[in-house]
Amino acid sequence: MNVMLRYKADSLDDMLTLYNDLQNRCRADRITFNILLDTSLKQGNSSETMMILSQMKRANIDPDIVTYGTWMNHYFRTGDLKSALDLLDEMQRADIKPTPRVLNSLVNTASSKMASLDHLDRLIDLIRPFEDKLDVKAYNSLMGGLARHGRSAQVQGIYDKVFTDNNLQPDIATFTHLILAYINDDLLEDAMEIYYALREHHKKCRDNPKRKAKVFVQLDATFYSILISSLSSFKENEKRVSQRLVAALKLFNDMRPLQIQPSTHIYTAMLHACGQNRDEYVLEHVYQLIKVDLYLDPDIGIYNALMDAYNRIGDGRTVLDIWQQLVSSAPPNVAVDQASVSIVLDSCGHNGYMHRAPSIWNWLKRTGFELNTNNYNSYIECLCRIPGRVGWDRALRLMKEDMRTSGDEISDKPLIEEKTFNTLISFAKKKQFEESEIKQLEAWKEQCIK
Image (cartoon, rainbow, N blue to C red):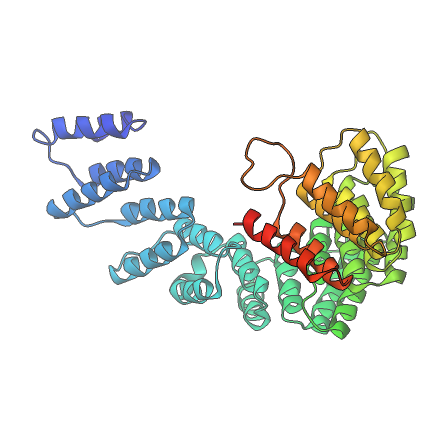
């Protein structure tokens, strides 16, 4: 019967029909119910799954490691971390030891980006009796999950216990998570100390390949990309922001001497950091490296990051130069996108080049570029920044003629957002328009934005 049921595994209905036909002539065993359970879970049929479990209970058949493994695989597929941890807890109470495969899969799943600290803390408690069954990949995943939350002490503890005392061999992912934990815990000096030691180890192994090293870890672009991206995400006070940017620049400058090619993602992260920190010196340094990098084919993401960074430091002239380069002499595989348009229009408005915005807008309309609501919002704000009310009136007319309200579902025009109205109302107040005009605009906003 079990062989015949497996043959029907593609269709749960056919399998259950066969099972019902045969159960009066052949008594089901634990393997039978495991087969039925596996198929019902894979096909996502919760009602049939509960029915199978109910029949299994009535048959006085207790679940075994295969049953629990089947359930665990289901939770891995659905990303239900809480239920997976509950199931491991239940297995321990039933005195059923999980297999190394189940344990390693659980740790890899529970340490994903969606895992909360509560999940991770509970996971550490539950796997403590089985630590010797975990492999390097599972420990790396656990360290990565803790590193994202800045749990440097716990990550260091796992490293010392597992990769020093137990003699497991760490790899580049191990050290990436170790350094990342200190960065996210705002312990930059400790993070850089580990990095410098790792860099020197890399140089020695590279320069003397015959040298026997207990642990050979080779730095790569992924290693630098993860750390530089973390350092370029600013949440601290201004002093620490500057220190993080300096640390990111040190890592960035080390790549070429180590013969590691920076990726477009790394360049973009550095440009983002320069813009966020408004560091003109580092920004210019990175821009020059982009110009001379023979192995880099800049994409529109890098050009957008460049324009955004120069916009943030107040250099509207360079933003316009880059824009002109994009629309006139960019490589065939690089074309301006809607993000490019919003950046250049925002720069015109904030950096005193409002007179250039209409020519850019007219060129976009003439070439048939598909403008979105964000583009309209950027241009409307730019027009509103023109002294007097000429630009403001032009912005209002543009909104009325070229955009649609939420009630107009037929038109393919960009949608008027609350932000669009708020921009016009805010500048009307700054320009001290008549109160009646402002109230009229606010009433129209209430009517259109529901």
